[in-house]
Image (cartoon, rainbow, N blue to C red; front, side, top):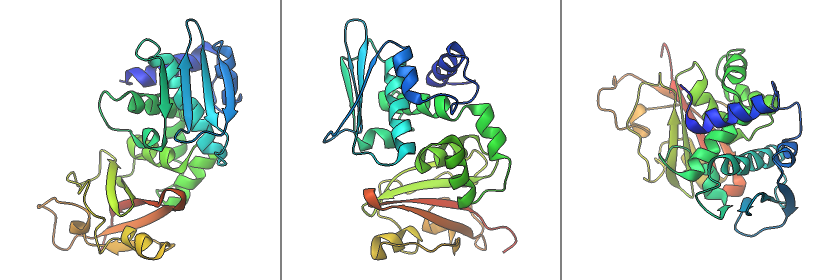
Length: 257
């Protein structure tokens, strides 16, 4: 069953008879809801919504150059519009807000869930996810298909894809959060710890770059599960986010090693 934020996104798509999120500019949904849309340079915020007595003003940081990130920011603010009107007078959404996905009860997490469903509807995304075997290139292609950020697309894939993969986000040398497919064999992640020395992600924080191809790593590099086979290996492949001094690590089981 879809979550409350996802259900709200589905209803909005149905209200406007939208079957493909790329059919209309995302800004049109703001106008359709009777709200004002603005873009301007903002410090400390990627997006912002201010509620009036009847309508609202949604503002997006004009310094955002990545069009896919911009779309997600707008969808996120629409999420606040549809979910949180009576909870606060305004929401000021900085970079941290868009990285908050799995904190139960968080308004920012709910807005992200809404945006993910609005831009990457469950059935459409599942169908596209099945068109190729998991790879970083497949994630990049899905991002292009849905015009969504790499991070949001990768999280959506771990939630809805059929391949057992884990996604780990590290920033400034620290593990910040993870997302995993329900079929992934490990559960105990080293969240809030330093990035492991023998991980591929550590290469980014040492050199500013990452290998192009998947690299073999031992499971205990990333995970605290104690029932893993001693001969079990994983692949790790990274996508660097230089602007955030961060890296996304995709980790999956190496079969037949």
